Length: 406
Image 1 (cartoon, rainbow, N blue to C red):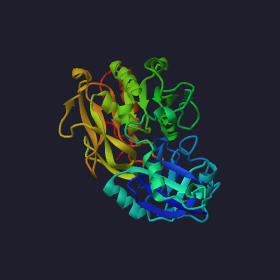
Image 2: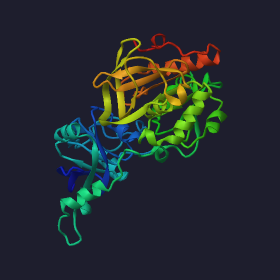
Image 3: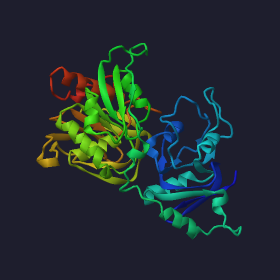
Image 4: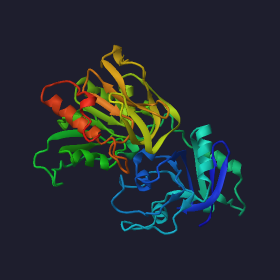
């Protein structure tokens, strides 16, 4: 290992050891409070262009396996840990985390005070940062590069505000995830069909739908409303993903096409933010976001508190105190309520349309790497699609669709 330095855009630095690949990386620096699930975090496309700090001090002890990746590659721009494991210890491990990061060219840093770094980001807010190691720390004449040069490189990195990134992480071509029966084998005839727009989808999400007998057509982010309708879906799903929702004009237009046709809709994370904007609400950047597998959220219909998985730096700006008419186009989409709220800071965690078959949540119900409290939302989506298809034509009451939530 060689020396490495983490440089924040406000000039604060942390010196440690290189971890993974050596070199240079820049991006928005964020922290993740999960004590497990680092492999799922690394391969979550929502972390595209972000340097991730793990607040749990000991990372890498279970190594890397071939089953838990949530996409085709590691997406984080950089990785920051305090005490990396010397050797992985798991029967599922195939290689060490350090080796995997190096193989995929992910520049990281270890042996720094991640608690002090996290406190700094909580106080100052997330910001741009860079990790530099190896030759990137040296001048051509053999001396050390001055700090001002490194800060300038960090400040030259594009900010997350205004970034339209879903197209950079989405699949290039549509593909189908087959519906599964109770025994895990493909069904000859699916119970339902869903068009899932991939804005940075995690692989476990279509798997969770497939387990419920849904045939999932995963579509690229650039898909048009015609592409969505060509699937002849019983419902449409918008996934998680990276970037600023205010920049996703194409995806918002497609979603309005879905709502105009009263096709049942379910969105998570980035999909929740796009649903909010399609309804006419604003979005805003959080000071340091929610990232981890331990966020408490209340379902306001039932009073039940769920422990949930999050990864977002933007949120929907909608009124918490009462049902409201969606502002877009003079109330074209009818009444909306905030269905879920974060108990740490009152951030909007879910939206429910009262006059359309549509709802969304800000968190990840696919439970990769956990927890499982929100798995019932996939059942709720199934109920919504079945009710709409069978002609009942109204959104199921949230209090009656808590399958598996007790």
